[in-house]
Length: 166
Image 1 (cartoon, rainbow, N blue to C red):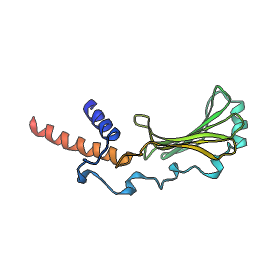
Image 2: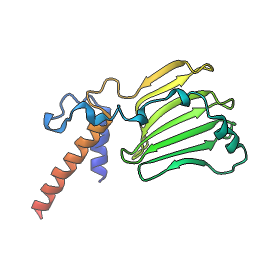
Image 3: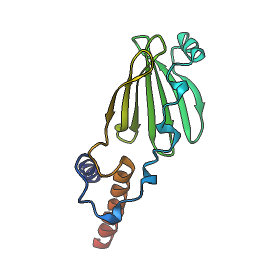
Image 4: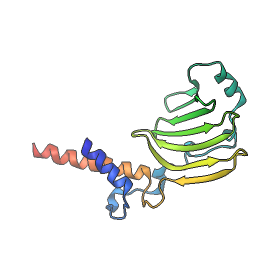
């Protein structure tokens, strides 16, 4: 398993132009059209009802929790709030950090199996305008989902080879 993890990291962190074509899949695999990858207008400012509910809580506040999705809010030590939304089916998290006044500070997307940042991290000013974007996939020929698919296909091949050896 450790070797597969190393293989995954090697593929993810290097230029993948030499990856065999049979491993690659089309762009719909990247799931960028999934709502988890969008920051909505309503997410630019922390909902005042959520902010008030968090004031009197010692634990996180779960807004939605079902078999496919969870949306929870945490108070930060500095008075700000973090919203962690999880698409359980994809294993993707959308994390949004808010300042103490409720203005969005930053957002990022995380592949939860290994806590690896994917797609883009976006930083905002007080007015909710984008000030900086960090593209974690810039320079790669494949997206996070394609890298995972490559590892899964490789793992299947290696397990078949091992089963035939014994």
